[in-house]
Image (tube, rainbow, N blue to C red; front, side, top):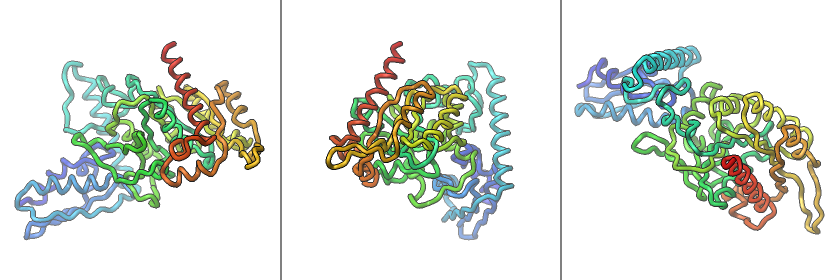
Length: 392
């Protein structure tokens, strides 16, 4: 029968899915209780509330402890670290990553670095690590396009979903990352509800819906559950979505960014150097001014802005008259400021909203609508523009 020291030794083989280090090393194991009949209870403190892969930790603890035939039951109780405990855990993770980096770089290029069986948190690409960076690698041929807006409510997520489907209908292989962690919505827009699954390499298997490969926080938490995370965890989740997902070969990967100029926008601009950006705005002046700030972040980070999409541009009345409810000229003005093309204008139609609510983007649900036609034209312009750049 395992004693307490042996239990802790076994738990050293359980790794935090986000920090990629032993839960024992990170002081996540708070208490171990061993009952005479062979039952073991383990109290584990998660680094953050609502950790999306808490089930993975529970499963791994059960797996390592039940290897002993005398263990009759394993109970895992989860709690959350306080601010000081979390700070210490992150400091340890950072220090171990730095140590790992130093050991790797000090070795001959022909000698593989020592491995614990799990990768340590990456702090910049190490020699020979390009393949491990997956979609973040400059060598990967997938075109990564961030869909950004300065403020919420301009339809950025709706544009992302429909643009992905439109590119798919033009023959491209397309994936979507829902990086709006606090306001994730792509699962609902695509009608995807299954919880996350992993393959034998412990990579997340993306949803495959309407021909699109998709990952979102909706794979890990209930739709109405709030994500209560600080900035550093957003960056770790971004890296996980890019590197720890079993992405198939893709032509385009669209990233639904959170509105504004916060941590995620900065991380994408700085860490994924090949990522391009599309700005989404409405025609009204205030939305354009705010969207300009999102574009300014890209310019400062030397990120390529490939165009502007103006959403909710106009309404066509039953008798055929066009009404500019939110004004006019905002998209063209924003495109002019950054000297990029206005890729297109999406009309305001109830079918667009209905498609998002029903889990079938309007390009699929109403393929002959004005909005669908606009999305397809925009997708074609993007495809032609990128093909021209690749050829030139």
